[in-house]
Image 1 (tube, rainbow, N blue to C red):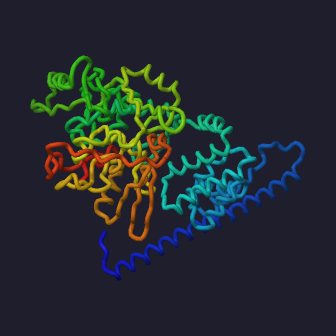
Image 2 (cartoon, rainbow, N blue to C red):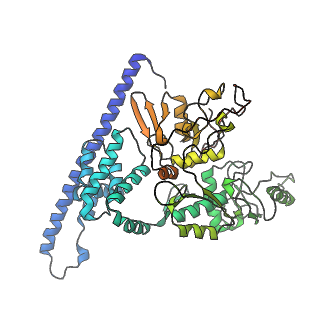
Image 3 (cartoon, helix red, strand yellow):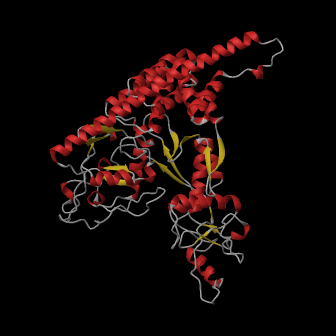
Length: 531
């Protein structure tokens, strides 16, 4: 971050204050809008009551116009907003006046934005009415208290904190809320422009874990010449799973048909490849692509033997199959120690029941079980502490602790993040600081990894996995939210011992120096970071 002297610094502070005041004013305006919209709802309620008094005895109930729907239609007609937006605005106005006045008060203070207000209301809407006032006040205070302490939780963490508060005050209703949430499951398709559509799915965590494992196994590792991102390979794998196709990628990122028809549509029958073998290994986790009873090299030989030639008789480039039908070999993480009862966690989708594990194993061909030792620093020490490269088991442990990117307010899953040294690794003298140990590592998405590297932000590890970040005049903190951190209960952990210096090792540049190899597994930017 470059400052243009004292004048530039003053301009920056002034701009920051102006932007902050505008955002606070926007939050207060949202509160005023809630009051105005609620007054409009009350107006239409009075109109309905007057009409009911005029209705004859044979008037059907369906002829009554819902005041909320009438209010939405009024906003659409007078302001030009979409019906979906009007519905959100009216719903929030009704909620904060009917049973969540603490949310409205926080909005009027300028500290709570409209989106977070909607999120908090969604987490406390189904609470026992007799506990509603206590719950909504406690949820709002918990959120505002975290802001005062310098935390900037993302939406998922805000939801989790709110759910914890609700469960503590109303534990009897937790089972009902979980059952009601399951009724919200579904898959929806929406038409988009330019020949695309959007699919959204809301699934139980267990079902989502099974689907995610299957898609990743089917997507596999990118074959040589395959320029698709991981997200694109997952999309193609999902279609191939449904149609039985085997998609082969061209170097330009398009599709190549292995049949004589030459269709470019990977969903058509003519786009099915000739690679009918089932894969070995676990796809994206090991990158293996193999045929039935044969290695990946055998599959390539089969393609060459097919004699694919162009119109001029010259050999065309051979493309390895990228979507085969792999066997599902999940990695199951069981946290059996720590705070609370033993539980089953899936990294991407959350907590699930034991019956789900049973169903998953029934469809799998073997699985890897991992019993996690929750004590901090159990993977530290030895030669690896003085090397720049991060051992895979230590990187996995850091991701399991963090849950998401550790930049304030970022919700990128830890599994899609780089693993970064909090105190930079000293390549000239590794023993002087920046060791490769758990308490000096954190998950950072590619965007915030670059920000940390090239800005003047300062990061510091605190006890219990918390991290303090200084942004100029501001000091913020982040708390780990992964299953390992939850098992530890965010209890202040003892300082992990400094690893013993390996005997016979002299100071100097690490033999493992160079760019970090913990690559982001996100939707784009697959190249390693330039730092």
